[in-house]
Image (cartoon, rainbow, N blue to C red; front, side, top):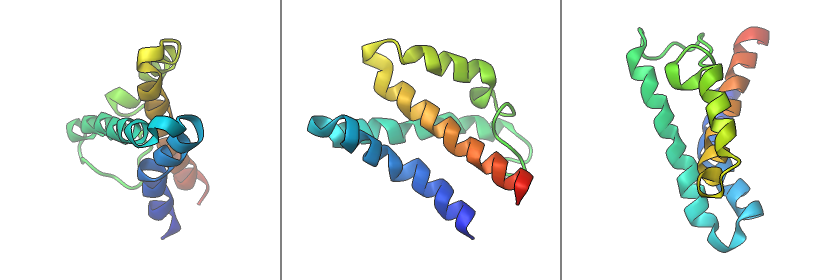
Amino acid sequence: MIQPILHYSLHFLFPFLIAWIFCREKWIKAGLIMVSTMLVDLDHLLATPIFDPNRCSINFHYLHTYWAIGFYTTLLFFPKTRIVAIGLLFHMLTDFQDCLWIKYC
């Protein structure tokens, strides 16, 4: 029961906390941008079944591959894409913690 609460809190609440800590003057805008990175989950629509609670998203879905994560990391180096990159990488970290729940719980 705690795993879905943790997962969705990390996806929807923590981006605002990160934005408030690092971008206080524009934290709402930064938080909304980071939450909008949830759109990378559209690649789940290409999987069969679309949702599998026992599947690790990392390196399974196209926008969750190591190559994609490498690309998101390079976006950190450009000021105009930095907030998006932080949102995407935090999204991948959140999905990775699901993989740990599957493996160890």
